[in-house]
Image (tube, rainbow, N blue to C red; front, side, top):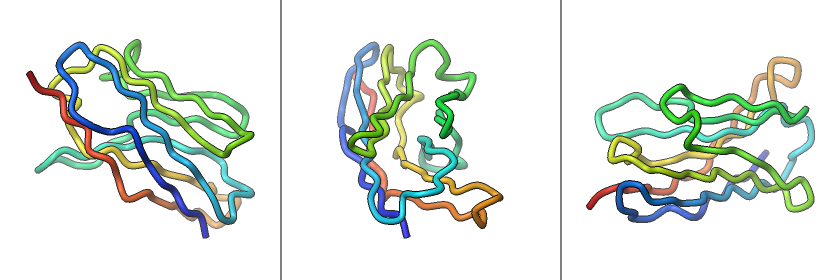
Length: 119
């Protein structure tokens, strides 16, 4: 079992910045990747950014150049720095931990944090 707790969401004006945090606890061994997903009302959940055990990262095209995912292994925390926010970034953001196909394919989710970008 992996527990994920997100924080850092809130209301921000277009062009502003937010930093999301995701603290992982429990059976964190064998986590292959951690990432951030988002889901807006009436839309499918989509991958925003991911960071893998080896340190490689991946971003959705819509956030490239604006968002940065990073991790601090000392505190088992993944961050998402979001700059130049747009109204279309408004969504509930979920942290995800993926143990990958070689570890049973288990995925774990946080409860989500609301990000609202509005004037």
